[in-house]
Length: 137
Image (cartoon, rainbow, N blue to C red; front, side, top):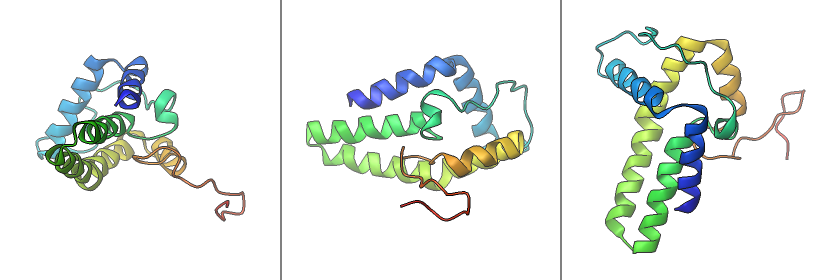
């Protein structure tokens, strides 16, 4: 749980909670179909690719999952474990794919390059490619 808290705290070094709240609200508005995907809606923040985002594209979701799985283990709680798995599925199958479509619409090639090199939800899981394009071992 401590690792999750540390990662979550480090996210706020690079993006303020207020910017994250506005960004989340705008994304959920788009997810509900009330705004076009590529609409900036007043968002002016740059694509953040430093700090924890250097290792995982969704460090806050990763941190939340680590905290939940840690709590489920420490508390020996199957209900928390089920919630953590359900939330992980929501992130991986619904929310992150939608957010990434939005980021591609907003940032284009810059986000594409970032997504090619940084794993979506679990740090250090993306294999580096050699210049020839074959994965390293």
